[in-house]
Length: 342
Image 1 (cartoon, rainbow, N blue to C red):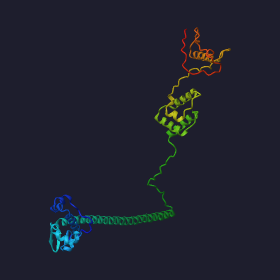
Image 2 (image 1 turned 135 degrees about the vertical axis):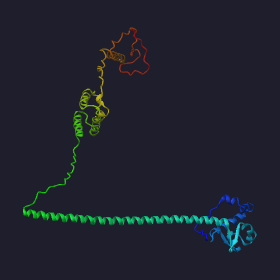
Image 3 (image 1 turned 120 degrees about the vertical axis):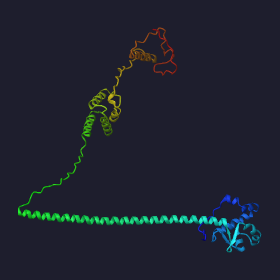
Image 4 (image 1 turned 90 degrees about the vertical axis):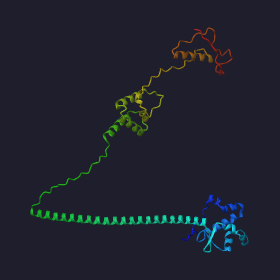
């Protein structure tokens, strides 16, 4: 078989095999031989048959890319490993690699052809299946038409028979033997549980004073009712307690938040009695020291303490002694250390 690998633009190179060959050993001694050897191998790769070159010195010199004079000197070393037969020089390694490459090409072609045939068979099967389906549909339609026609003919004969019997006064009441299926009625009204939750939420919403976020509150309310977290009456009682005890300076809780946080269990404490206003300064008194003394007395009385103790040692701050007048701003600094004796 003639090996033709001109379809392959590359030639494999076995590096270790080449480096261990005698030809490469000669190239190590005479590096220019490697240039001529590679040129001959590449030329032989795309010849037919692959791995051979015509046995002519001019052709060989041209393939090696050297002058005819140089070819005469080197051809003995360059052509070692080549074999001359049938008027051509053959290199057994190049021929072997070309045969392997050709086998890979043929295997690839066989795989491609097998895939093409498989696709063709698949298309043929699909076409046959479509044709079978079409024939089956036609036969089914014909059979259905025949059956329908037979039924219509039978019905016509029955109608003629009934008409004849009616004329003769012998018509019998028709007895229906096949039960008729009544269409199921689909109720679009909400379930009783949903209606009950909606009614209960309406009561809750009416009682809640801060009406914001109604949809969110309804979702939270239905969730609480489904869980059975608290009876409705208990929730409404807790809501009434929340409305009555909420301090006036506090903001209303949103109804959805009130429900999600389970605020019906809240037990708020009572605030202490509010303190009275700061008493005014005594008549005839003036200055910051008198005002501070009045504030101290007010704090003691508000916290349940007794009146301010006497100051026999004169430890109260006298702003006049420091040179201050009424209305002056006292400088900030450490408070004087005072000792009160009871």
